Image 1 (cartoon, rainbow, N blue to C red):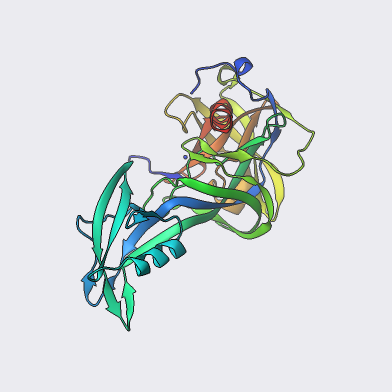
Image 2: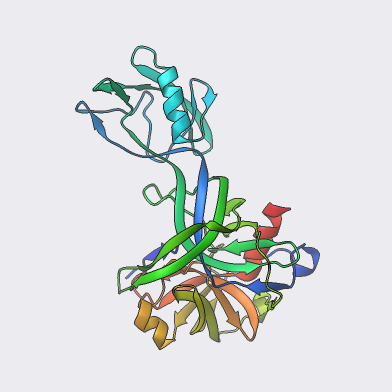
Length: 325
């Protein structure tokens, strides 16, 4: 049976010595809240207005981003609403949409309901969720988290960052993983306690600048050739803000793709009892072997949720350094 994979909310070229990041970092493992204001306004669905589905001409598709109304840039739903109201001609409006990096022009017909114009579009201009902090570089103050990209849940489209932040988030409960179904962390948010900015959302994780005081305790970075098949530990939060270590086994080491460099199996019975294995929200949980940081959790294998994939920490460090300098 083909193994199903689910991402948990997804470059080995240069040696560490010629990059700007440090060979020692602050170990993560803390649960974090994530908020991203998107570039453009993402279309996530359609609804009927007066018995019609309004998709424009040429047709608008789920996953498209609205970037202009009548050649005026729009970045928020409020701006979209304001510009539509100002630019209605013959019960329609001109939009510029972005699709796969291409800009397209379309005319969207509008319908009135009780004197109010309706677009028939479900749209979104921000994303909020949780994940796990992987590391903080004490020299550059660059942090990395998640180990994979943030996707919009309905379209599965990678989110482009206009602005964003990470902040305090405490785990309130765990929905356990079972064979065939990935569980998840449930958490509350403390938006006012911001930890840092989000500068970029990439296939290797989210990256930005840490804005709080940085711990002086650090851990060494392991190169991929130092990683061994066998025992290791992951660091994550299952209750409140209590970060704990849990036993795993590294089962293979490979360059499968950007975010699946290692496979591992959960061996810690406490983690299995509480979470059923790997759950959504563990993305970015750091992995330590022989007192060195080797990588981070990225995916759960849904058919066998005690098993998952991880990314090399050097891959994350290189990406964080590239986009923040």
